[in-house]
Length: 284
Image (cartoon, rainbow, N blue to C red; front, side):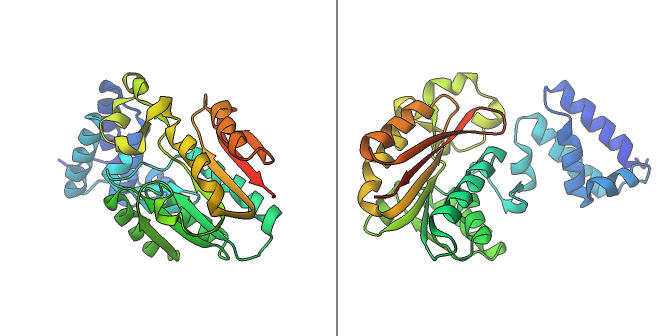
């Protein structure tokens, strides 16, 4: 018996609600399977759906009901208006990180104008930050690092697909770039304290890489190490921009203030009013 898009969507929405998942995922997965935009899907609601598509769709819905994130099921996520490939080797890009991009681009224009400068993205994951910065500001010479070979493989695929000229390097934190000079350093490092694991959604903890989520010293160790290590690596002027957990602003700003006492250090809130970024601008 044939089923319409609407009937299939109704089943999926109810099924996900029963399993304590967001019913919005039902529509997103249906758009992915059918290749239709939101408006095209609405127009096709009363049209019959192909049996093979229904089977594929039902399988995806069941995966999500069991906890697998939609982005890992579809293999993609939107970030700053572009489509990035994602898999279990990388963190799913978050909308909040787009605000780090906006803040960085604003500061680059203010400090450097259109001059060619060098930017390092430390812990690049899917490559979302590095690739977006290069595409939004083509004058940048961008290098991206990660400790994970599989993450760098995903990032390399994204750079190729989006035609972004990025150099990728394997290594821990600043180690792959420590002997060079940089004008801008950006990072969205792991910043969740290990003890917060129990309070997090299993959709995140059971599927996203823990090495990209959790860090020692109440989630602060990588910020402390960055502040300690980058002084010898940066030109003057320069700035450092990091994404943070919403309770970490004072601690992270303190690390940078200790090592760069003359710097202008800002704790910046995200669109939801939560502390989300720290920028450290160094003039001399």
